[in-house]
View (cartoon, rainbow, N blue to C red):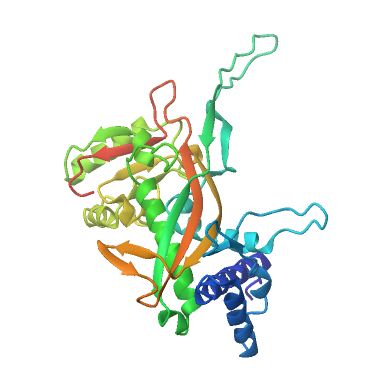
Length: 352
């Protein structure tokens, strides 16, 4: 008999609440009263929207035109209660991170947003010693790692007719999730440099580069060996991972270079279309990840540009849902004193 997982059930419930609340504020067209009226109408119709009403605690922006759902988890000093919308939006944020490449890696270190995390980049070596002999002196290296708050902003434009269809809650939720995942993956799996105050560097930015020697099985095997030799510390089959595109993974399988379980040289492969053109070998234990809940805004009066075409939301009966998703990561100890790296990338691979 399958065992009931109460924490999983609670998380799924909060994800459903997120979709219902996002739909309510979209249907409310930026009006708190209209959003609450929509939720009440759903309750009257027999839908499970009773828990949405307490979550609709909107704040007006500076112009007073858009409803904003705050998502910071606030601890009340007098009641000890935690803001429920914060927990609901955090469940959505965690679900989105879990779908990203960085969220699929084992051993990533979760930290809060901060400007100073002490990270050990060099570990001292221990030795066996005889009685009365000198003990070895261990040398350890430390660094302060900055993981400040960064955010991915997304504007999801939908027609009011689409929001009237069955499954609209899932449509809204998936639209916001897919946009955040695609943007997060595109940056994480890249070699893009950090944009100060805006976006983190891709993992490949601080990786040591190994030039591809060819596309034959022999050449690829030699490249794999070179990448493993360049990696920091001891090889860990438990956490170390390859990141590559599905096309590259398929090519390696066609050449029968990968293992029977799909791994490469014993390391699991995380395939993502965001890694197109990249083949990375990464030690996730050197990756620090911070994420937080999201905020939601809604507008029906803005003019937006989509693929070069200007649209008036009001004129076309559209609604724009703006989400701000807080996320950042950093690579700690990208290299050690021996010149080995936490991330290694293969360049100029024709099959990548």
